[in-house]
Image 1: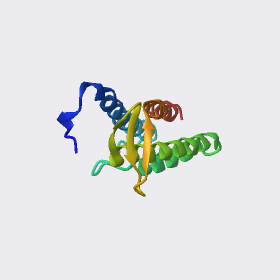
Image 2: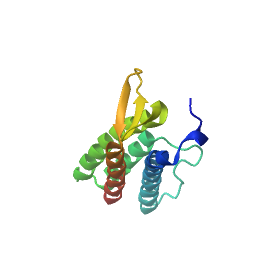
Image 3: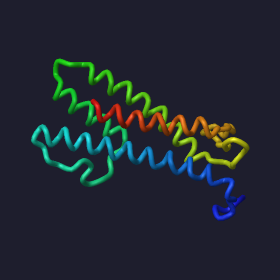
Image 4: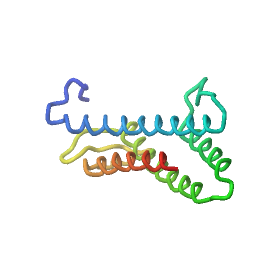
Length: 145
């Protein structure tokens, strides 16, 4: 087993890409919390999102859906968009869990991971970059709702 300090400079792209995925997810959560805060403020509620504990992404999406439903009672298009965004978030979250919980070792052009069933999967850097771009797109779509 290789220690973290044992990764060579050629592994910098791998470490950077995994770090970008984690940062993009955190930025998505923060964008969602900010959006909910703005919606609350617009409705006259000044409570802080997740004042006691940090809410999960599912709870944040439920709260967003509820607030948008209250705001747009006759317009279901925003709720349809939220459902589409939620599906994308769930897919990306499964990928993120695979990377974070199942990272195995670097390989040519990417790295391998072990999924929940202990199957080895190769993840190419291009796939990782695509998921990061998808996260950024989801964040922009959330802000537009």
